[in-house]
Image (cartoon, rainbow, N blue to C red; front, side, top):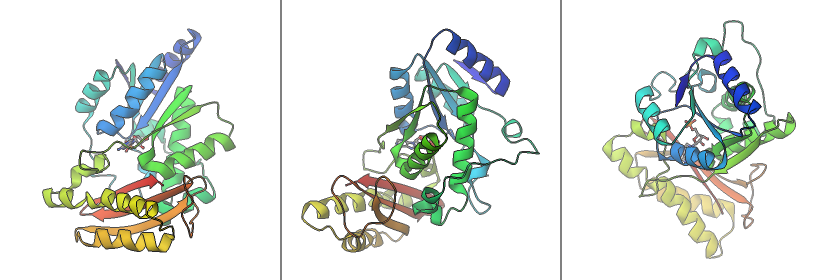
Length: 280
Ligand code: AMP
């Protein structure tokens, strides 16, 4: 595995790989790897000749009151995990090369970025779309892999790829969970023992929604109220939002449509803001 920090260096290497007819799979990340990241790496490894992972904690997707400074980082451990998953190139660019002082361009994906997490995280998806487009232009992969834990992020990137005619196949990967159901996340490292224990209620509430729907309840407000009741039993978990939305355009639905509906939520647990979702 080669670890590359320079943009021109990785571009040269990618050009050489492409000239040999090799298919490039790309997994963009913010590092501090867990088994969710590994699932993306493994799928990308299987499907492509070359596996490129990027690690970049992107300041432009954090607002001033968020956790950019404290976001967990461990480049040595990340290298070991990337190597174990047979990565060819680990691209870890420097912030000042990605965002030189006169940087001033961004990508904004209209309606989609204002819904769900976009309501409280102003500018977040603009930051995400901009860095992902930059990384796509640098690596020019054939396929790129994104986790469905960040479901809205996947839809935003998908829209950008369509709208800007990018020649990249997006491959979604199902959410990877710990044994008790909690979705794997770098931010789980913020949780104390008690918070970690109570955080399982996030997934429990989604399972409850699924069970209720199967028993014939399809009203979104009834489902949301039941989910709230489940979560409120765990005082360390503070709901930011629960929404029942169309899984394609992410707009709110009054009633669940089978196979077409995403239930998504965000909650604060201590210092961590955690998100999760299921398609019903
Ligand atoms: P991050 O480093 O948190 O920006 O995540 C990098 C990629 O890993 C994104 O495409 C995420 O959606 C994906 N990812 C993060 N957590 C999980 C998970 N628990 N299951 C599947 N994919 C995940």
